[in-house]
Image 1 (cartoon, rainbow, N blue to C red):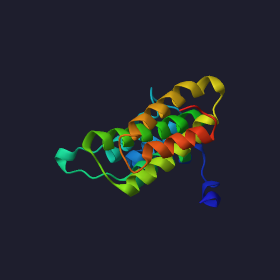
Image 2 (image 1 turned 180 degrees about the vertical axis):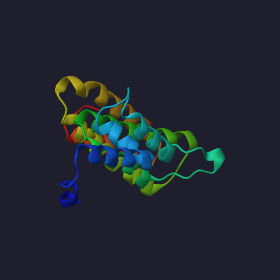
Image 3 (image 1 turned 180 degrees about the horizontal axis):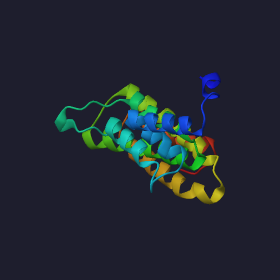
Image 4 (image 1 turned 135 degrees about the vertical axis):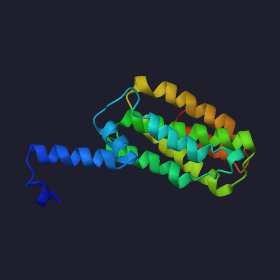
Length: 169
């Protein structure tokens, strides 16, 4: 593909970009994110996380941790800014714990994935400058507290992760 792209002139590349943009919603989201277009580039990724971690149970929608994680992977490919990555991983944890608590979900593999994402969110948050960490760490602590009501040791594991990084839960 790289070799073929070298043959394109500016107008050809612009036409190709226009065709890619028009061909799918995913391409549009990718390009909006890559070029920081719009007010909230994280919104479509959060919408995907919402859909797959907090589905409409009245419409018989399923959960899918893999599809929710794909939203984060897609963001990483598009731009992967550390602040946005930390926000999406924390948001993932909030939605996962919130849904589980709201509907009484009891799924050990779901909880395992949630704890693993909690660790990723913690690492992403700790990679940020000090000034940006505090609000995200407070949100992660709120996730931990809510996780205590889920059973399966979810809250305990989250507390151990916080303590392991010298953060007082």
